[in-house]
Length: 470
Ligand SMILES: Cc1cc2nc3c(=O)[nH]c(=O)nc-3n(C[C@H](O)[C@H](O)[C@H](O)COP(=O)(O)OP(=O)(O)OC[C@H]3O[C@@H](n4cnc5c(N)ncnc54)[C@H](O)[C@@H]3O)c2cc1C
Image 1: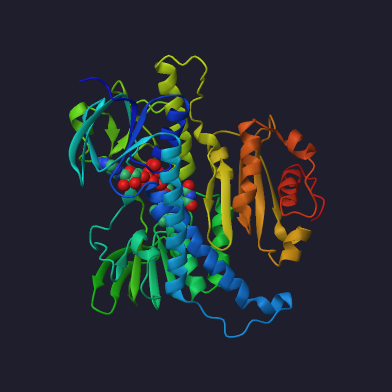
Image 2: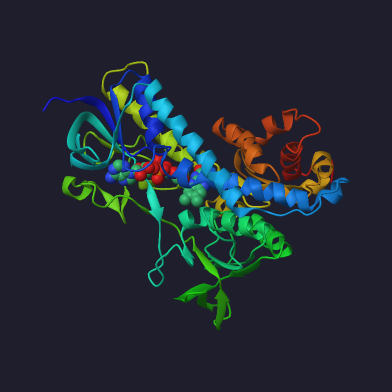
């Protein structure tokens, strides 16, 4: 069978659709296969709709604090149905945007479920029947889904995954969130701001356990002050789902099992890659616990077959998926003879992570503890937003910025932030880290005044005992 395409991308999330656009830009005849919605989890059921919900919660929260800005706002209340409607509208707008981008770049869209028949052919079953399409290269970008608890399947009624939590019919009176990674803590923050009574259970000894320990400690305090109940070092042993609620048995840090009644439960205990039943086993594709092994460019061990995004080793983030998509498309173009592309392998040390709870969290690179574990002699500096004029003017003095350097060379190893708008600010450090910056360039950089980003500068100065405003 002659190849119909140069590249087929299986799955149209931020990994897949970006890979397809880059391949098309490079003159490759490209097709994309999608079984549900163009744009994947990220813009239909992940990053974007959650940020729309969180924005409503933020505005609501600001309105509740109107008096502290010298303003009056009476009879403030939330209309949950309208909040969800706005979020779904935002997701729909972006889904339509991806449809437009596919047309603009002349990418053929095959709607249906794809299964690999060989490393270079895909059988697609959709509403119009079954067809087999082939290409010189295939990129697997089928993403992931929520991991479920073995003892309590999500029913969408009382026990929710993120999909249910994004489209609630009613505000939970008493919500239990299992897991305090980014997804769990964002929903905990959203529902708390909307007025629910929220408890978070985390097995590890601190919330957002991948972040720097100082950030975890600050967040736990901030959330507790907002009224959330946080149980760390604790595990949910069982859930008994009834018509009106859920009884949870939780083993606390001290080993005691306590029973609690909740109206709803959100299970946010990680993700499972969508790598079963798509033909990978028959092709002998190397994978560990369903996660496909790749090289720095996205090549699997099977010639012609590539993988990107949530089906490959983490972090499982949209921007990592997109970046891998660009690299894989360029590497394929190079293999097909394009001498003008020179892709660089993925550098996992420079992938930022953002959590949009209240207060926000953002980080890149090594935590202080990980840097020490890796054998570095560390210089770390912290600067609190209470020492920043703009933060005080905005009424957002909560939080800090911490930077971690190699004491020997001055290389920036990591940056960790908690506070308002830090998810926008982290990019300054990501650029610096990608350019392999040291404390010298960062100290020499002029930061605009008044901005919250001046706290970035101050944290670098603090690492060297030179902070000015504290
Ligand atoms: C609630 C939530 C919030 C999140 N927030 C953020 C955030 O703020 N920032 C961030 O960076 N990341 C966030 N993420 C993670 C982010 O959504 C994922 O990392 C990202 O979507 C992964 O992209 P992907 O292209 O690998 O796969 P996906 O986005 O999962 O897309 C895979 C696509 O493949 C399709 N597919 C699967 N199997 C087949 C098949 N056999 N045939 C055809 N099509 C198939 C699926 O329908 C899907 O559309 C969030 C995730 C969730 C759940």
